[in-house]
Image (tube, rainbow over all chains, first blue to last red; front, side):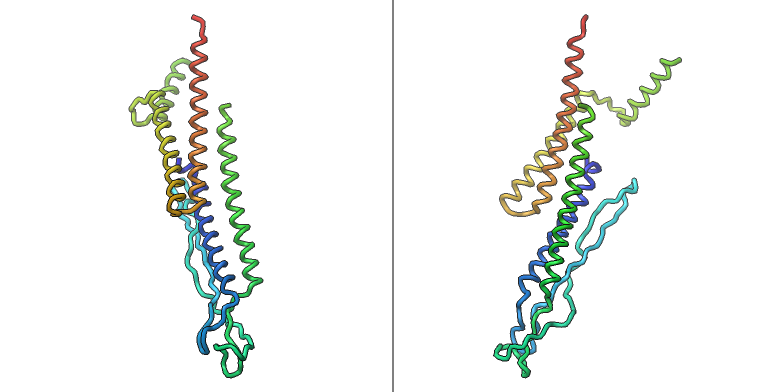
Amino acid sequence: MTDLFRSMDITATALTAERTRLAVISQNIANASSLAGAPGEYPYRRQTIQFESVLREARDGVPVGGVRILGIRSDDRPFAKLYQPGHPAANEQGYVEATNVELPLEMVDLMDAARSYEANLSAIRVLRQMLEQTLSITR
Amino acid sequence: MEIQRVESLLRQMQHQADPGGAKASPAQAFMDLLEKTSQQGVDATQAADRFLATGEGELHRVQIELAKADIAFRFLIEIRNKLTDAYQEISRLNL
């Protein structure tokens, strides 16, 4: 029975991964306008998520496993600088360090995550259809 | 000659279907399948209950468990249909 539903189990790991990716993107978007709290402090750093494939070969050579989250890392790109002389966190030149999140990039990532999620759902739907059609052999 | 060949083939098939040698009757096999399918349904319902009650687990995992139980149940129904068909076929035999 587990063999039969193997691809469903693989897809389940991908759905989990994509959902976590969405959480990371949400976090980035939520903090897109955050500034440093005080002079010399750093604002929110954009987070990126890394996936890793889990490929163990079963005895018949068919892959089992799926994908898992390798880690969530900070994006080391430089922070943006906003000219806001009145801001409590502004330096002598009047600049405040702002987060390195770029909203257009996050939006593209968002679409990518949504499409990937859909693609995995399609894989489940197709497996279901295949199994249901197989059941109709005896009809 | 032909009959012998068919018989040996039959024995082979029986051995493949039941390598342990514990002659499971079709009824017993059906009961086992029923047991497993029922267990799958119970697992899925428990996963759904746990998700609803505590929010633990993930929606897609629950849905996938339900889909698995659904497929298993449909398979059981197909087997039942075949068995009842076979029974009716036999009961209609003219003696």
